[in-house]
Length: 308
Image (tube, rainbow, N blue to C red; front, side):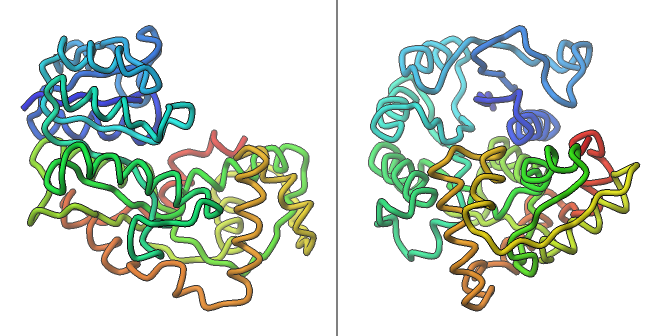
């Protein structure tokens, strides 16, 4: 089976590519800049493993079609390309017409809350992902794609806190809010298995959640213990505007504000409403990869440099 992975220089894409290769797939690495290194994949291992590199940009459908035709791939891993037109409609059509039979799309758990793909536009994160899923459904049909819906990325912790850690003080809004802290290794691991072997039981939606449903404050305490070599002050804040400003190190202004608004709303409701498929998503990691999901502590220990 020949597969093409778009975005292999990212953490999830890298794990997807390496996992697909470990499960017997011929892997083609599609990237805007083919001179870039692949995290976790040394050049010698890349050559020995028969990986190939092709130039492609998910915002440019013609490059996608050319890359797929050149590679002969039948399955593809893609992610949300924010600058793509019409919610990646032309890109998805290019995948189909150039020979792709199954797409694995890195979507978001936030879509699930709405019970369908008809998500209000003001719900910007689930809406953006749901619109891509709609285009996949239209172009590939229900058996031609798999939507991976992971939880809150473990790497968000570094994105939120790294700059503040460097300054010696982390300002935390709603410290009691819990997240599952999904590891890129688990997202990419499940994606890679599906690329190589297809989905189990014909699943079209696969939730992926981390094994530690813990609060922000608990997560920071783990970071403090396992990754930091200096004391960092933790200050609890109750100012949503300040939180939005702080979160712009992770996301653009409108998305940072959306995330803050969601944190405010979650503070007033049951956390169980946020992660209704938590147990299923945790079990899916074992089901697909054959190993337990990566804990937040394991992620921090293995990625200390992310917090420096």
